[in-house]
Image 1 (cartoon, rainbow over the protein chains, first blue to last red):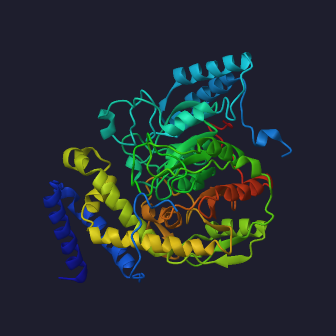
Image 2 (image 1 turned 45 degrees about the vertical axis):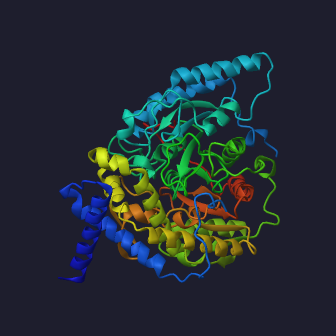
Image 3 (image 1 turned 90 degrees about the vertical axis):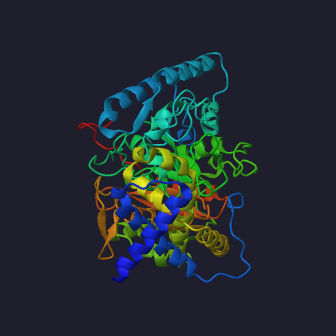
Length: 67
Length: 460
């Protein structure tokens, strides 16, 4: 299995778990495009997670978001 | 101010202004598809009431007789709040107008209708499979931009002089860029969102799109003020921008955004910024740190909040979504809490670092979109010699700014005779008046302006 196939399989597994947890029925025809969207989110998360942050930084919150 | 009309857009008699507006909408909207609802009876009644008030000598509001329309995620009493969706056709009509609609009408403006948009605002194109795309008046084969696509189309075509839109990741600024009009995304928390259908609550802003800076500012001014119904809206004194609009540039330190904002764009988009920077004498460049990370974090938070918001609809009405939006929302339900937490931590840190930039500059210039409006239906384009997906690339330069709630005015620049391109005038939090002042200076000196399109071979 290529790296790309492995990533796709992981995205589909994540999607299946989410559908189970949320009671969602994903149409089979949409599986591929939704998995591609999951992979795009994974790529975005990797970039955010790789950015070093000070240890004591608090998360912004909904009501704290106004600058 | 030498020309009072520049800050006083009142149009008399209101009945005539509204009649003309409605006739223009009837004539041109069938090809532009900006409106999903037109309200001739309501508009005529409001205008007649304004004219009666005038006859008895009542003082006029600053927007008296100015027609306006709202993105159809903003509540209009008696009308279903579609939010661009098929699903919301099954909801009850709104019981009352949104807060900002009430404030605009209290200032004398006249609501004429609801405007087309991308489904549930999860869109940068202005395309919509349920209602058709809102079209770019400068070339109807091209995108209006989204998700406030109908706002951009209606203002650019002269159907209304001002519209109210929303901006979560760029949805006011993108159609302003593609359609060649002025747009203001205020500071997060400045204007109340009560009575609007949400997209991603920690990022949603409402704001105006207009045919001139003076109207943009006048509209913004009357919409300010605290609102108990929106917990995000800050209890802050109104800070009118119109009185200082013509104060010039003296004392304003202006720089161009370098790094991320000076790459990943077409030469025309960079040229638009260079033209404006040169005109303003802005020779300095500053780098907004980690803008790409900010964009990724905005994507995660947006998806997480939107996925949670639509979960019930995904369970029960999945087949009624725009397929592109549905696929994104399904994917969004997979996001782990740890990603959102990390993105929110980054957000606070990033906001702090960007705030430091504003110690040394007052205004930062950047492209609004990396390219001109693509053709409707386009899925790929070329940036920096590489093929990229059109939809996400549209928001490259808007997302890192709304992510931390900075106020931004997008102004239209016409480069090389092609479709327009926006330039973002970015200010520190709560300094909308500075961005509007710079925009006004540019417009007054002819560097940025709207250009009326030919519709059916004639000016609208």
